[in-house]
Length: 155
Image 1 (cartoon, rainbow, N blue to C red):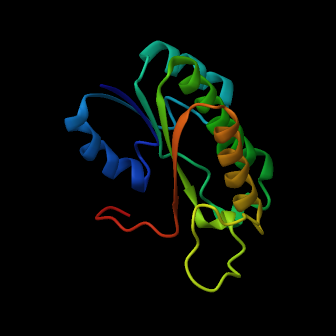
Image 2 (cartoon, one colour):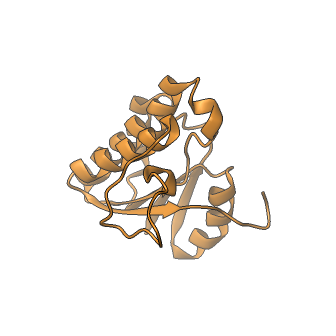
């Protein structure tokens, strides 16, 4: 199996490097190689490596800074996941995408489920929600994981 991992230097990506390695050939990309602020550049990485699975652990995660840098947050969190989803769908690959609970407004009593309506309150939440929508619209095989907090040995 060929796995393309984006966000190798982030907290989630760092842990995924070890977890994915036994599953096949893993090509790991950080921001220096694959800049999600330039979404169209991602197509060449996907086409050149021809993965069976794309794991997108990258994102614009500076929640507060996103309010003043909405354009970059939109490119990284919304447009780039859409491009990855289009490329994955075109080759029949899976896209595993890490999202956030910020797609919700936090007003629900109890835990959220996959079918709950989204209502993001911030630029960060809106861009992550749009990324999810673009992934679903691609029609490709995908898995969206919404995290609320990440714990790891590093970070």
